[in-house]
Length: 87
Image 1 (cartoon, one colour):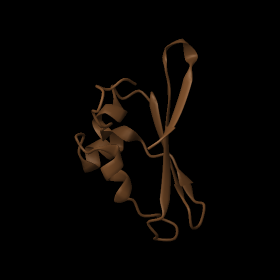
Image 2 (tube, rainbow, N blue to C red):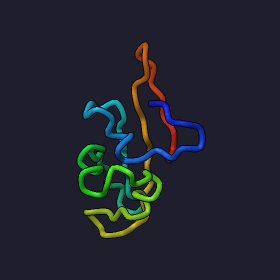
Image 3 (cartoon, one colour):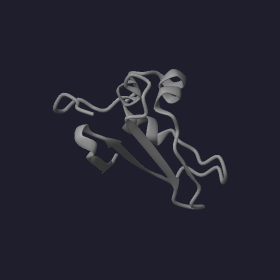
Image 4 (cartoon, rainbow, N blue to C red):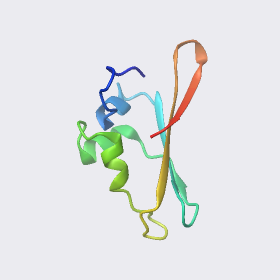
């Protein structure tokens, strides 16, 4: 998924056209709970213009209630390539 240089990834951009082109994987560093929230649902709930990095700091683990989370964004590019980067 391409963005303008310097333009932060937003939940709306992550949601794209509703296809799961981008997958957000969120893991709790305290209890190891892991979820893959749907970017479209998160955009609807928290606003499509919300930068993913700002959204990340709001996260609370539903299992242990702590805020020590790590997140990885991964997606499929043209020609079947897979790209992963920490957010």
